[in-house]
Image: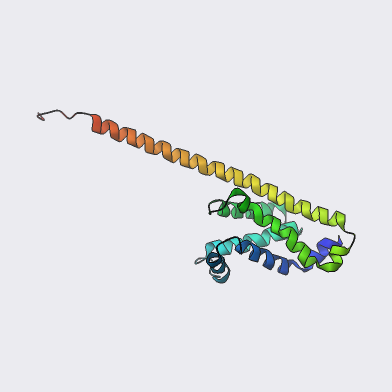
Amino acid sequence: MALMESLHGRRAAILERWLQGVMETYPAETGRFFTQVKDPFANPVGATLSRELAVLCDGVLGLAKPAEVAPALESLIKLRSVQDFTASQVVSFIFFLKQIAREQAGEALRAAPMAAEWAAFDARVDDLALGAFDIYSANREKICDIRLGEMRRKIFMLEKASRLFDEDPEPGGS
């Protein structure tokens, strides 16, 4: 597959551009921090984004096994699910890869009769995005269950406290 071989050779540039695109989904100052601070303890979000995007990139390029890709995808989607993003914004970064690959492929590969190879590449990216939607939905459901459980515990505690305060103490205390 000539396309995939060419993209393998451009992996570093693809990954760098993809990471840059993901950082652009954050407010400017936040994206700069995630990019510039390399210490994973001072910047766990930036470290996670860099590490997991590399695994996803390798997965789409056929350089990583699905067993390696699934945890990386889950990690990224969990991270972005609890940030201030809409559902579409959480997974949109995956689709950036299509345009980035075409930019990095160069004119010769874009002009060459490679429709089947591009379709296969696009299908890999789409499969990754569909997996991301599934993970996002499961995470949101889990978050809702946690919130519901917290509300139930609060209601129980309020009802218990209310019963304690409603009990009349015996006058005179003998």
